[in-house]
Each structure stands twice: as structure tokens, then as C-alpha cells.
Image (tube, rainbow, N blue to C red):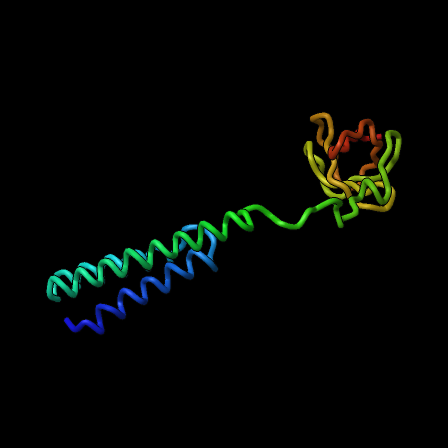
Length: 156
């Protein structure tokens, strides 16, 4: 096997490893294939080249891998792995903030509620729950309890 082919295999593997480290987060196919190509290139070098050439290729692979690990480590230390932008407030206005539902509000079932379903209360559609009872479609409801994100209703 020619030295150019072996070097191409190793350089292709190192390229995929660089992609993995700097562009694609996590363990992906590019990193696994890159590692396989680097190891395969070194094995081919040992099998088909002279001792001096195979040792040189192996040392270059180790040095380049070490430099990549060092650069990646420094980049992670400088920037960190966590989100840089601070999320102070939500950009989403919840339904509760727009038009709160209060105990005693009335509406009607929008589909069957068994014991969960949808209801229209104050001209808005909400996910609601009943206290275990079945409520048919289009039956008038009354809100009996409002928790953080749960509206509990009963048939009127």
C-alpha cells in the first residue's frame, strides 16, 4: 500500500475528529469514523511500510491528536460548555398571564372530559381536569379549583 493512501486515510480521520471536537457536539458518527480511520491508517502503516516510516506516521498521529486535545481543552476552559447568554425573562406570555381563570368562571366542554380534556372558558381553550367524573361534550362547566397549571372543573 502506498504511503499517500495511508496518509490520506489518517488525514481524513484527523479531519473528522477535528469536525467532531470543534463543530459537532457530543459523540457522533464523524468522531467514531475519524477514530477508526486514524487507527486503521496507523495499522496499515505498520503492516505495509518500513519501520522508520510507520514510526514517523504513528508519532505524527499522536502529536496531532495531542495538539487537538490541548486546543479543545483550552477552548472549553475559556468559553465553558454552558450557555453564555443569560435568560432573564421569558419571551412567552402564558394564557394565565393574559387572561387568568378564576374559581367560579363558567365555560363548556370542548370534547369529552374523561377525566382530562379541553374546555372553553372566557373564550379561550384550556386543558382541564374533572374530579374523576366523565363530562360529555358541550356541557356547561364551572371552575372549582385552579392550581399552578391545572384547572379543575365540574358539570353544572
